[in-house]
Length: 428
Ligand SMILES: [Fe+2]
Picture 1: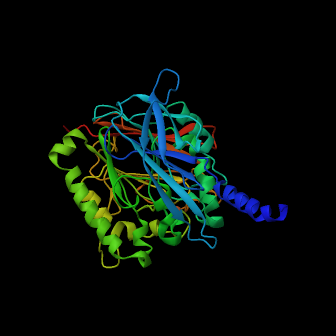
Picture 2: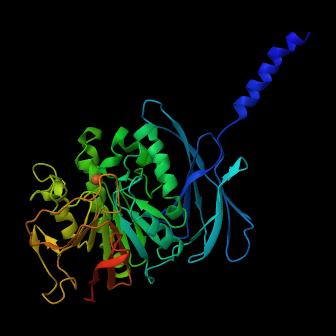
Picture 3: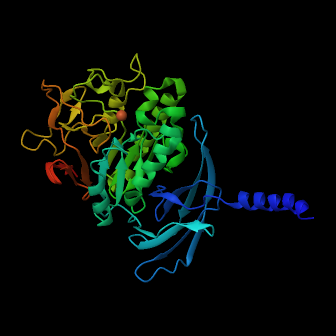
């Protein structure tokens, strides 16, 4: 008699075994949708769960009396094991500008630790503070601890990561990506972590990048723009110019989108409200590093476009009066004089960054990765103003409609400010 029970017992074990899952939320990070009074929470689990965020305004003890629901997407990595990761996205709406909220995310199957964030202010009459860098990996992430501490000290309203994450997110069947997202949680769960793709995200048509982040617009974060205080910030992909195998039409689509976005952003109504136009993308137009990268070439692709001059970005950005162009890819810090067509255009000899007639370029790709730093070429180029071969990141304070403060922090020199300029636009 007892023998006949065994198959039944086995069936029960099997059913109960199937119900055991890995439901714990991890890799929590925030992003901004581009719509005022919102914040998106993104996280991962390794089994399907609903996507819920519970939150409440501070001060006061967490009551989690507000609830928002979102979507759960299955991301199947392109590696040999085709690992499955569930990506959860929940957008919180109707938040109070400037208000601090506590939240946790997950579902009744498991909740994350509690985190907090401050809602971005509305309008253009406030001064957002950003930390900006690229090329930060799991190994040798030299800037990370300072970024973690300073973010939790509420020194930043948002982070801009200018491409190249983890090294590389797809490696080891995307477990390197999981580890990276865990590693930045102590930054990205507190402030919007805004991104653009770099060459290290290329695998499987940028699938780890496209799936893991939640950026504004409908391009999987390849290109988008958003308003922040007195600035319009444009994020785009330089990689569409280098991986034509994923579709040459992407170059044209992005270029047409950039044209339209810049037209709108430089209209009188928009620009009088938000005079600053800032771009971010991975590979620079100009650099003086000692390597064979695109930016060392006099006619870099990012600057002059595809062969024949198609989709050239420098002319486009110059035409619409882009103020500041942030880049990475080179593992160093380099600030350029205002430059167009390889010619320096200083505002005046005494105040080169006051009303400059050409965009200012800054390359900040030294947050730290396993490839370490990139040295500079000994020869001087006249458009190159400052070169720093230290680990570090950039602080940008968009102080108001006329002033932007840019500082370079050195991790090698214990957080010392090693470059410091004001970009001024006082022609009214
Ligand atoms: Fe890169």
